[in-house]
Length: 196
Image (cartoon, rainbow, N blue to C red; front, side):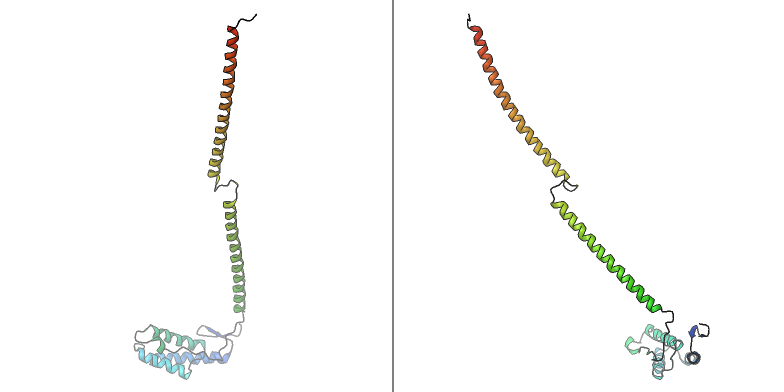
């Protein structure tokens, strides 16, 4: 921007626009001097007259119109629908020489893409966790979720098996004891007998 013309903090590439901005600065000074800002009705009338006459066509003038508009919106007694919007001149061109809007759109598209990928990965992870939980609950293997019940069932089964074995052994012992007693009794009978 070597040959840019600066007026009121705005940089103009076109000398005609810069001259127009200088004229608008003088117009703003004149309107400020002639307008009583303590009377909202008068400010509203001046604001609408400036819009109708299309006095301001550069960012310098638009900034002043916006200042008046904000003042009117803040004042009690003026309604928002009474305050007309500021029409922008069709010949006002915003030069995007740095390509900022294109870069911002590209960055936004990239961020949307990242968001979609992140959303998909999160969905897959949630479904995976849900499936793992279902498999864990429905499987017959001992896991941290059902280990206590499995151990109790196993001990109960062992206890039942041991009780059945113990009962069988006692029955066998009783049968053997009975046979032993019968044999012993028979042996006593031989002593009483006279054998040659």
